[in-house]
Image (cartoon, rainbow, N blue to C red):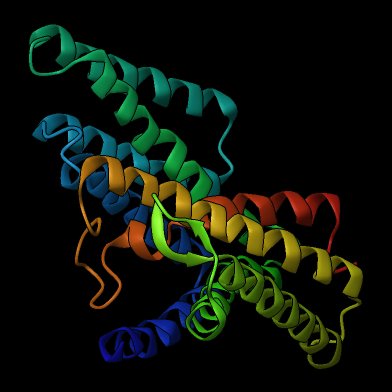
Amino acid sequence: MKTRLISAAILLPVLIIVLLALPEVVTAVMVGLMAAIGAYELLHNTGLVQHKRVNLYCMLFAFLVSIWCHADMPQAWGVLGILVLLGALFGEMMIDHVKLSFEMLAYCLFAALLVPYLLSSVVRILNMENGRLIVVVPFLLAFLPDSGAYFAGRYFGKHKLAPVISPKKTVEGAIGAGIVAVLGMLLYAFIMDVAFTVEVSYTAALIYGVLGAAADVFGDLMFSSIKRQTGIKDYGNLIPGHGGILDRFDSMMTVGPLTEVLLLALPVVV
């Protein structure tokens, strides 16, 4: 626990500076690097695909997805990139179809396309109007529920939520996650209202908290199920006390895109 707190104390200020002070392209690069490392963790560290060149293709493409989102490049460039990736992957399979199966290529597409695109929701949110203010929202909804779930589960947890996938998670913890997420969103809406003099919707903030907590729990369980099936404890050890990128930012894969949709359909800043 001490190691986790020290890591958070170091990384949180860095994250705040990158999101709120540095040029937006820095965030895109940071997210791209996270996506590339995540692709490696998902393919190599799980043992699903241990093919050096293929892993390199996926890492490179995962990085470029974030840059593509930042630059708001034409759709044609994205399609061209996918065709190049498919050509590289299937080319490798044709060269050595014994060691590289179609099932492995499906894992590669998940790691190189879907995961980075979901994670890059942060980049797309930052490009929105009032991006510097609202880009904080997905991080609040991804990190605050974890704290609520931990303390509620520790002191009140009795009923297992998903005993096979994640034995430590409880129904009480999930409820605690929802309460903390709602309170956190209402507080942040108040801060935006008072400190930044923008008009906010407290109703939207409440809805964000409820749905965000649910997405947080689901994202955590989703990537935990992959760990259980592949027999690993953590995706990596890059972040002391937390594990790998996918261990720390697994819930961002669901919370980020959900926040993006909510910001478009039900803006918290009106």
